[in-house]
Length: 421
Image 1 (cartoon, helix red, strand yellow):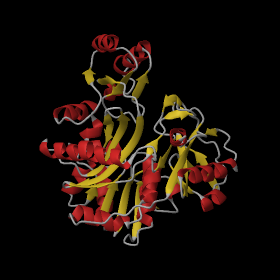
Image 2: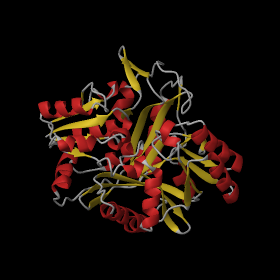
Image 3: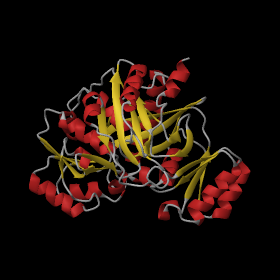
Image 4: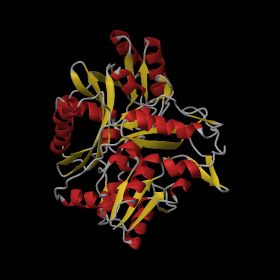
């Protein structure tokens, strides 16, 4: 089988690598990809928004499966377009991708079907939102209704911070149309974890859980980012809680989407928090998390191509996961998640790549190496028999390089170790 992966980030590099090592997959293409993926896939210089060009390429090349990585083309209907052309594409159709594309759609669905989540209200007027914030108090969470590249959530610890977030999103149109409406919800306290599942035609294959680190700096300080590192498994979340989340959140959500006439195929990403009242939903995504995909997919022990074939054919499959621990650290450009300066040289990665798995996100080839070309540049992972071993290995590798003009968190995995003590 020939596979086409749509996207250009670290998540897509993880998907590419997983298909590349599958014996059932003959060749992997990625569109548009990035320079760091060239060793793992054939780069196709077609933008992820150019549906007609991508479809023509898939037909001409005899692509057996297209796997869509990012949220933007999903919410714009890329799967609908591929299926209408008689091609197999994995991901939700446009009406189902609303689960990520509209926070209010997701929250209304959860309210209707009694799926546990934070209490919320939706606003499109600044004065009404401010009145609600003053009535509720802080801490409180402000979310842009639409897509905002992982940056549309403000966890406000004071009323003033919340009001400024609303004025910025609605009043200043910080994220354009995506923030013309905001969802304001109660602050939930507890341990967060990412629970992703493969879904098609009512079949649900849950993956190993992971934990992301959203804040830019050590100790979960600084602004929210798209994610600064992740690890899997998450020892402080017992299997009984994962099982409860599957029964009370994942299965009811898939059933609710069917009942609403928007059946879900693709990666159902449930961003969850373990509260004193059990697991609740923080957010849904309609695709792999990034950086969670990079650590979770490494733990998949089955042939990815065979599994995807079976899933789309409705044939039962024994999906196997490794017991190994995987921990990954994001290398970001200085200034991320605000303004960054591209073009700074990365250290030589050849030796590091022999002992660590490297996923390229925002890199560009320059001479014999790479330069930064985005906010999050790389994610570097190590595996170990436990998380401590994986953590020590990844940081030992990173310490051997000079990361001038870049930065990374030095404490990925800290919540596990502090919880165990």
